[in-house]
Amino acid sequence: MRPAANSSGRIAEAARAGIFAAACYHFITLVFVKHLFLLAGACLASTLGLAQSATNYKPGYLVTLQGDTLRGEIELTRFPSENGVLLRAAGTTTPGKAYLPLTTRLVQLDNGQRLVRRKLVLQRRTQVVTRIVGDSRDSIGVFVQQLTTGAARLYRLDYNLLPSTGTAFEHTKRETQFFLMETAPSGLLVLEQINFRPMLQSVFAGCAPALEQLPRTKFEEDALVKLALAYGSCAPGLPATDLRPAPEPAPKSRLLLGVRAGAVRHTLSIGNEPRLARSKAEPLTDWQAAVYARLVRPGRAVSFGAGLQYGKRRTRYASDYVVPVGFTNAGQQFALAAEFEVQALQLPVWMQWGAKSGYGFYVGAGAVPGLHRQGRLVSDALRSVVDPGSFSPRAVAERVTDERFDNGSVLTLGGQLTAGYRPRLGAGKLTPLLEVQYERGKELRDDQFLNGAAYDGLSVRVGVEF
Image (tube, rainbow, N blue to C red):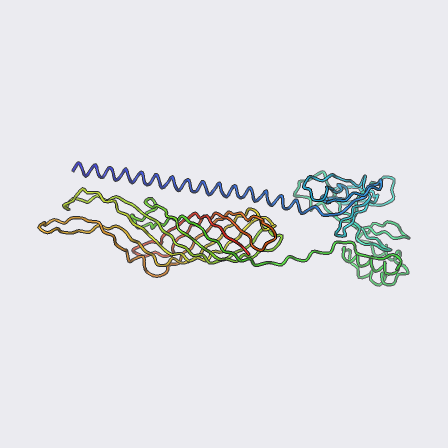
């Protein structure tokens, strides 16, 4: 009996060692995946920030009060009326130099947008602005955006009622706009919604198109621009134009196609089958390939994708077995091995976040429904044989195939997390990619013999989009 006890002790010790090794592998895998996605997220945030800041600068020029003209790239601050603009040399990424209305006469962008300096009196109160008038001894220089040229020049003033109070999230509660109109006979007028029609009635006297349109005009930018242009039609010598930048066409969504393939390391396990438990599993590396389509919209960081993915999942298991008493070879130890294999056909659907340019780092998450097909379990099994001349059985190991796993297709459902990188290689239509993906899921079956097989895997893949 003592040898059997020693064998049982060795089996228990081996089992504990196997469980500890599997736990260490699982922990290391989770830590690696966690830090990988944290690193990708940090790089993604940095890429998004740089891409966003680069698009705020637009080509143009400004004219100082001394008459100097400076050309470069110009960025409008949040409230250019008082905070001015930033100017930097074209083609550079250095921070721009601030130019305030105190020293600048004109800002002109190549897209047509124009800021001009006007002297106004600005007075802030808790609820309303009590007065904004021109030509005052207390006036200060501010930038207003010129909306039209001609006999009636319309301006817009973007104004912050309380710039020194409140939090950054309260800006919209205190922002407002004012419209000003300048004509030769009346000078600069501040338009107010309550009385702008009677005020302009006398200004537009003698211009039938403007007077006809005035009663139907709303106190809105588009309507006031049309009104100013109508008045300008009565003075052919002063061309009336709309200086506002033409609205950019809405970006059209594009459907990108792609292929990718790589190596994946899977672990399969079945809960109610002790010999196929996760603690005894040894992951094996196999291949995986996919074709997919991804819907992107230029200028958007989010895209959506779906595809068809095929690959194999294999896992090897090992366990020790000691022949019990009653056999002629009682106490003999067998190292029993098993290999579980399935073919996986999946339809992944995911959402992806990346830089608005479509290049750089990206992360994604999604659901992965699919099928397991042609399940196959080949394992070592013990059977009894009786040798000639002996009346006691002997235990021997042989390779057998478990037919319970080969029962057609089984539905699966899982999820995936992805981190990858798309480099910009030029103006070509092909974009390569490199990505790491973690997936986890389960078969949707539960019968008296087998629970659904659970799986997880870590893959490294390369691909191309076009």
